Length: 147
Image 1 (tube, rainbow, N blue to C red):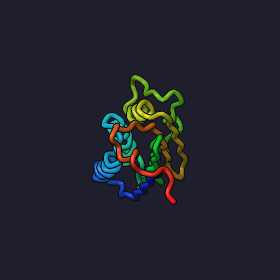
Image 2 (image 1 turned 45 degrees about the vertical axis):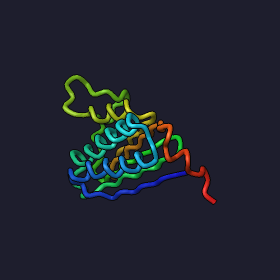
Image 3 (image 1 turned 60 degrees about the horizontal axis):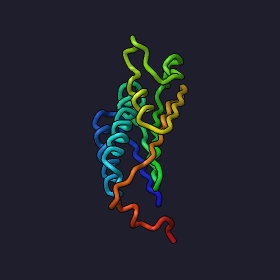
Image 4 (image 1 turned 90 degrees about the horizontal axis):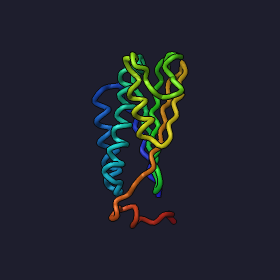
C-alpha cells in the first residue's frame, strides 16, 4: 500500500492549516497513532510556515507526501531565492542570539531523517517520519500489493 499526495499551494498563510487538515485526514483514515500524527502535523506546519515567511518573491510552493506501511516522507519545495549561505547550519541548532531557525531545529527533532538543500533556484526540505499504527488501523486490513 502506498499513498501519494501532491499539493500546489499559494504562498499564503491560509495554505498552512489547509495542508495540515488534508494530511491529518489521510493519516487518521489509515490509523496512524495520535502522537505520530501530531509530530507530522507540527513538522509540516513549520516547513510550510517557513515558505510563507521566507520564500519571497515566489507566489506558490509544493508539498508532496508519500507514505507506506512504514514511513511518511514529506517534501516542501519553493522556487524562492534560497537561503543565505550562513543559514544552513550543519549542527541543526539555532544560536542563542538567532532570531529564527528554531522551526528547522524542531523539524529535525521530530523527523527520523531530514535533508535541506537550497540554491538561488529555491529550497527543498525533505523529512521522513516512521509511522506508528493503532491496533485497529485500516492499514492492517488493506492488501499490501494491489493486483
